[in-house]
View 1 (cartoon, rainbow, N blue to C red):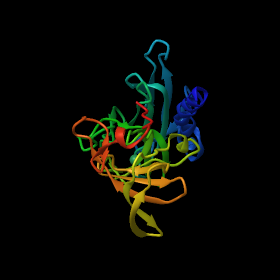
View 2: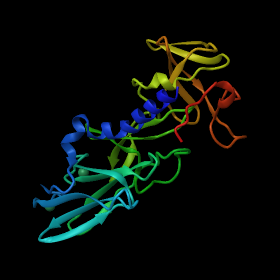
View 3: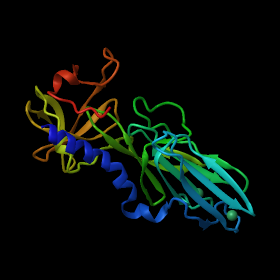
Length: 282
Ligand SMILES: [Ca+2]
Ligand SMILES: [Ca+2]
């Protein structure tokens, strides 16, 4: 069991790094210390953009540095402490101004993404709709919570730690609207099923009333006690979507556990009582 836990931990820790470098995202990636020429501000002249990993993780001051050379003058921007930083540059919304993304880990798998605009003389950080852990209805933030998982079709997907009945990393999709990153999805965090999901499956100690959905048809029923299932999506406060081990999908309501101040209840029962084990990431 101990070996299994260690293997699982190693696999989980490896996930974000693997996702960052994989697939179509690579074409937008900036390499540490490699200068690229781009027209960042849409004025027809090329600027030189350089991303650097600065500081050191041993000293705890690792961070990202961005330098733009424009008209013979170099201007720098440094992130706050950010471990394993990476950077991407692309004109996400096609308006002629390049979005410069910098992301990394604040510490303990708390990933953040910053987006900068260069206007010819200064950097401007763009605000993001709040997708932090816990209540996400708060004010706009100067960063997006999570690391860059995908840049595709004018959309930015961020993946960050979100705990809903033991989920680990979840994604939200953003689009730029008037230089503000707004949610561009259905309001649900997505927790894709991967090869590790079933090792973290939930097993209820009693039946859970649920709505099953098959080919768009909804049927009321229960997830029987003892049936393993995983969470596939949630708004974190009122509903979770699930898939059972035998492939059935559906949803059931949840509520914040007010008496405890954290976690969720299902049908009025606290998650600790309802499940033999809830695999918390934090
Ligand atoms: Ca330019
Ligand atoms: Ca743009």
